[in-house]
Every structure is written in structure tokens, then in C-alpha cells.
Length: 67
Image 1: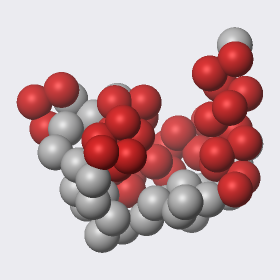
Image 2: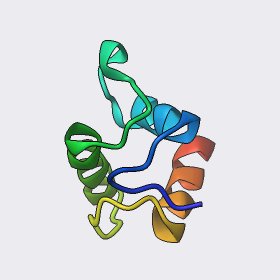
Image 3: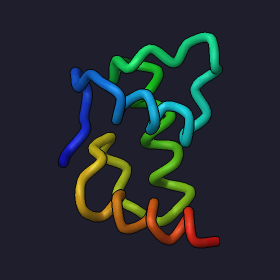
Image 4: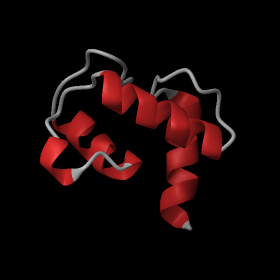
């Protein structure tokens, strides 16, 4: 599954919690704020900061969750 700007749903909601969207703003909509936080998260983990949660970001997320 790929999440990107414009995606909606519970997977986006879960991702928003991971990247630090304020709890009152977690809405399941991958908008501007989620995109910015996604790129910041990707940069911090050495992933291309493209704002897309695809294979490379998913792999980095797996490593992050194991730590």
C-alpha cells in the first residue's frame, strides 16, 4: 500500500500518529501538514524525502518500530 498526499483512511490516521501530528489534528486525511511531517520523518531516517509512504519508507518504519 502506498500513502501520499490526498490519501484518506485509518492507515493515514495511524501514520499521522507516528509522525507526530497533534492528537487533535489526526483526521485521516493526508494533507499539507502530514506531508511536511512525513518529509521530516523521512529525512531523519535517511529515506528520500518525497512525502510518499512507499517501500523505502515502509522499510524504515519497520526498523523504527523494532528499535
